[in-house]
Length: 323
Image (cartoon, rainbow, N blue to C red; front, top):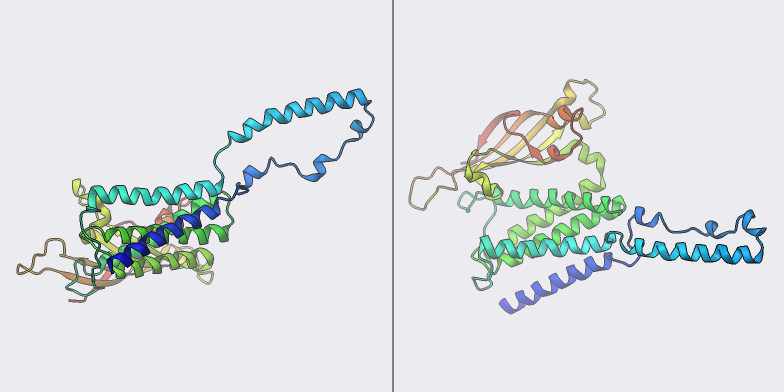
């Protein structure tokens, strides 16, 4: 089983790198890079050129030849093609995973292993909050990749697809790399990575849906050094779905357009729990009403960050304990 897993790990990594390199075509310039290419009409001689004497034509051709030669170095000095940037981004993401994993997660110190972590049961390590963390990060990071690809000249449909694939590739690489640490490979994490990437793709493909529904994370900080590793501080995280009134054309009232309906989940008391000791673990869902802070700030700041992040204390909630 270990040998098979290692082979699959190698094949997935190789396939992903080859797929990324296929985007790095020689003609993979962004639109701005293609703007300097001559079109056939530019090759048609002007009326002035037609009346030149043979000697003048030769002089003109030599001048044009010199000008063309001078342009060649400037072409070479241009930035990387969009395909090359894509390849570097994805390989760089994997390299970062390996470096950080070796530093913080003990990559390479354990024999390759799988671990069944469970889903949202009370007796799981984080009460399922970590699974929603995988979903949210895959959803959000796929959109970050897509944003970069659009900036590099890909069409919206290409950027959306490649963003989802890039995120899925790097997340899968990270999960398999976890197999060489005490964490092990979790198929539950893999599933949530796939679902998050798929939802990210669908939301990117259908902007009308993205106008109405956000998937967000809320982090309540300690306001001290413990916030350093906030990404794994599940006891301080809440994951929610926000349905935005502003996304529905039928809602005309300008004040109601600032409201959102929220449904969320969090798990508390897992960080300090030790088997046999006091058990304060609690899982809960909630419903509530919140303010569309992104809409409030859009007159001053043009950003979509708050489509992914919920600012604490900007909603009223009714909790329902599951324990």
